[in-house]
Length: 203
Image (cartoon, rainbow, N blue to C red):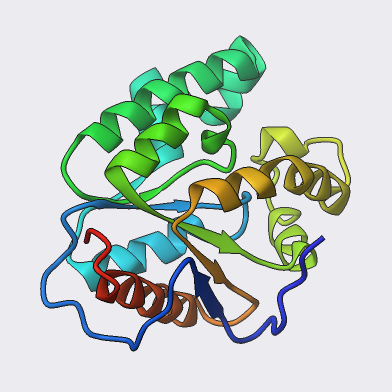
């Protein structure tokens, strides 16, 4: 299992590297954030959207709005399969729309159609963190249906075994985020994006 080299200072990696340059215009493609629950996609995404002058949408909140039910109620009343079907519909609508910063649910990339749309329509950033840090965050809340009645670290480790290879395949960039301030994570993402764009990748 991967452990981040420094829990307090984010680091970045991507498919290509280049000297960092400042973006001269806001992105024309959606910036999709992927990663396990509790890694900070929503909080970091809101700050990133402000930096990039883009609207921010939380995928789970969009699903709740479409279903007029909370994620927890969808899981408990309709089951995970129905949640995933609704999630795929919402992801398609959002990815087909104008550029945004999109915080996806941790399992959104399990859908092959969603992954294909991300590759076609978005620049996808995997937010990765030490599992012990993520577990310490998520155990403070009782609103995660996939964690109820389970040891958070064991459950997250099992998810990581399945999802990490998919995140790695789907993401254009990987940003390791630790226990530091969310502003550090935003800075690391912006650095990674500017390097990506400097290599001529679509912005």
